[in-house]
Image (spheres, rainbow, N blue to C red):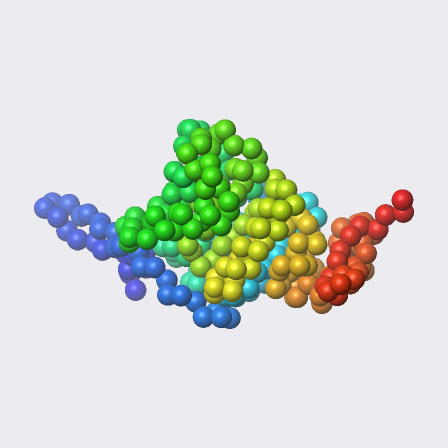
Length: 290
């Protein structure tokens, strides 16, 4: 296969010159439950002279919410960036939909994964609806027929429709976070990569966001979400990956992975893991002697 074929381009000779036509990206088929949408194998990432991730193996499957947890500096956001193909691998490989990340073009990636960064900032006074509609940009060369419905559904799901006409810059931090998430939802990619989506939210909207994650997983998509709240991770994630100093300390269902010994060790803070008195679900809290 030629490099042009790999990257979805077609080279043709014009009069006295060579020009390149980029093929229209093809949307991926809907994943089946259990399909591997992203994976890392022996992943190592360096930022400057610092090794941030080392020898990391991880598999992300359709129909699951995977929470990345761990202390500050553990490598959670870097891992999310690598899964998004925004951060390059120094060693090992990242595959998205079965293909090495570097072999996807940007338009192809935009149809396959949607990324929510830690913070959202815009230099121009776009209205809320305009910001959400930016999530439909990857579909501009494919199919625009469903744009209005996708935007409306995303705004309703995140409860931002009431201020659709307000400037994004005039919103509170929590409102901006919800608008940014609506943009990601409107993109309708099967792989959602969310970096601390609940950090600026109140209690109600934290629960709302994680319920949306579960709904997307039930619909067959995959959600990888960076969380600091271990209680939210325990309640809503199907799988958790506990990172420590750039390595995977544990991986599996929260009920199996979240133990007092492991979490106390990883966070260097005494932690209690208790059953919920009504449901029996896992509860995680710091041990306090007050």
